[in-house]
Length: 543
Ligand code: AMP
Image 1: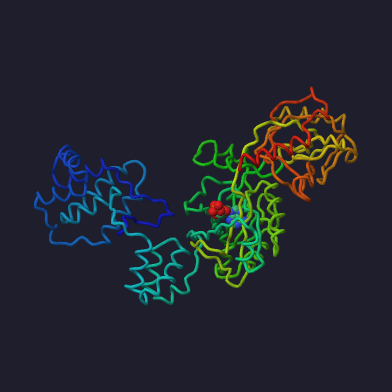
Image 2: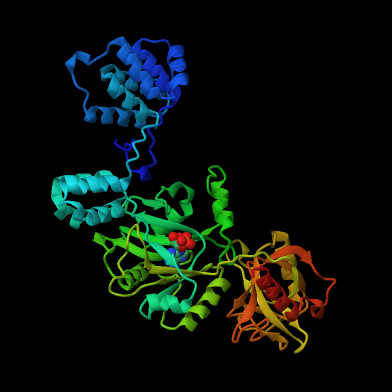
């Protein structure tokens, strides 16, 4: 109550008394007309002082000599916060009026300020932890352990109760609880792979850094609760993620963390993050959204499992146990990870991450001190991101050289095509992306029928590809495609070895524009040289 709150923030329950209702309660408790209360409020700008002045004017000192207790105020506010539905407005006014009738003028000031959400003493969570350390712990030194307990529960009330009932021993052995969000561990940032490895004492785990929404999932027999990075309860926005965990995570009770990422409903490829944000705040067409923009969850940490708190364990212990719960099932995956000890490995893995639709890498310590540091930003996690993003200015015309079988709604037909640019010098077609986006249903059936006549049983001799397609074609059909940008790629062969040894170029997040370039022969498609030029212009523009 010192903070003007009744519950921990993550519960998202507001006291929620509108000023209009507070005015009614003040009027009822003081016997004034509402207009006078409103007029006084307009003058002072503080309903608390208005209540105090009016009660004092009325000569109210204390109801029957009885003192209002903190417990009683809390219990009444709790009732107010929980009253919902028809008749709740009247009952809120009544409860508040009764409180005011029992309070002294000074008490009424704070009761009203708290009711309307304007009690601002400026007492931060950390100040309360300091106070608890001094008042009930072993002095200031207890602060670190108290803070840890707070980071593991996000609930000052529970920390205080634990301390007052079990002392510092109980705080020392404080464990996470399913249903109470753990404050997330955060990363530092560096842009030089050598420096990163130095910080990690030479070896570390490198993971794809997915560009999505961080989700902390609390799974129990009864329910699955999802918390955001800011510890808001976002369960309702992601019924599909809830279902995924309920059905596919092999654990009775667990707290896991991962990144929720939008994927293409037919190819399973990662989509740009914007797709996920379209879901937020949409209540009504959520059902449709869940189908159009499915979500995959890439789990990267385990904090609790079947009665055991894992937050103090080393990272690889947590990760290995997590691996046993997830066996690469569709849409519920582990984050891609390798163990690295050379800067070159980091750069290669980075290229692969970008090519797979990620925004960079997360490098994580695997040393003896690699516990999960709840609520802390530190060097145990380092993000390695490219610090630019760009947009492709022009569309490109690419040749279909292969295709992949569709899944889900695209079962029985092609889900995506393998596209190539033309290399004039060697007279071959070199792959530059796999594209499954932008095709409407009618485009897909047209695609299948057009491609029928070019189908061949193996890769065409003029096609240079490291990717294995499900079907191969004589290079003939040309499509217009847009994309987010051109990036280095470990898998595509367009421009291979020209920009960087061993790397080709790829179009990121490619999308069919709807234009069939049947006016173009495959040799008139966008050339490798043009793709390289586009890549270089893009780099120049980014400085
Ligand atoms: P940033 O938001 O740029 O500070 O980067 C940290 C965020 O990256 C985390 O909060 C996660 O949401 C996200 N992330 C994506 N992939 C991973 C991963 N493999 N491990 C940890 N965090 C990840």
